Image (cartoon, rainbow, N blue to C red; front, top):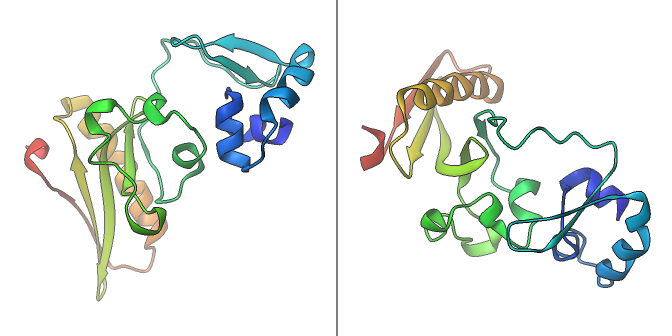
Length: 169
């Protein structure tokens, strides 16, 4: 349980069951609770975390992130509305073999998806926002995307970003 909390905390017993595949998470967490931080979320669920885990203030903006296809933060929580807004849930649903699009996170929430295609010596990252991004958000996405593309495809002699979808304009 402690290893799970270090990976995905704060988390509910259901989240840790989803993450680990183990039953009995609720009882185990209740037994560990005196040594843990215990919170309630907006729905009244009990969340547990390690006492020394970093927990930024609620009003701290989260940086833009481009998550890989099978990222733990999207797979490990039973209630994914903490990351995937209900408005985007259908577009971000799991497909065959547990695959879902690669997530674009803006301020900690899925706001689009991304992909990379390599053809010859050119690597192109396509970013598809699910909703219109503010100018500052778009600039932050471009900066993160360029850095990730350079990391993923260091041998490409040409690298480009492409915006797709109706919300990209």
